[in-house]
Every structure is written in structure tokens, then in C-alpha cells.
Length: 99
Image: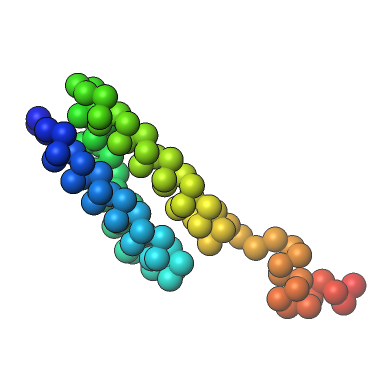
């Protein structure tokens, strides 16, 4: 599949928009939409990676998407999906303060 540079730019912009939607769905706690948007972003990254094997534009756009995902989405996933710490549990329930 051959993509010219203007087409790859359109896919790149679409992926950045999907990352914004993904952030909103993560904050809402909508796991089904989160998985769907993540897979759509991965498809676009796969296309740009294939383009990157032929031109530097695809590599650069894919690298920017990876950095954007790591900076904006991964911290949200870590915060929302991680189990609460003992301190957070004790503050919320007051259970551990009794001992």
C-alpha cells in the first residue's frame, strides 16, 4: 500500500484526534470505548510504520504519535487502572486508622 505524504499527514492528524478522544474515554472509565480507540490508533500507527520503511516522514510521524501517547495517555492509564495504595484505602475507609 503506497501512501503519499499528504495522505500520511491526514492519518497522523486523525490519530492525534483519536488520542484526545481516548483521553476523555479513559477519564470517563469507559473501557469498551477505550479498547476500541486504542486499536484504531494502533492501526494508524501500523500504517505509518509501514510507510516509514520507505520514507522518513512515516517514521517521524509514528515517533511523534508514540511520544504523544506516552506523555498524554499512559499516565492516565497508570493512574486510573492502578490499584489504590494502602494510604489511599485507609484515607477513604478509615479502616487502618483504628489499629
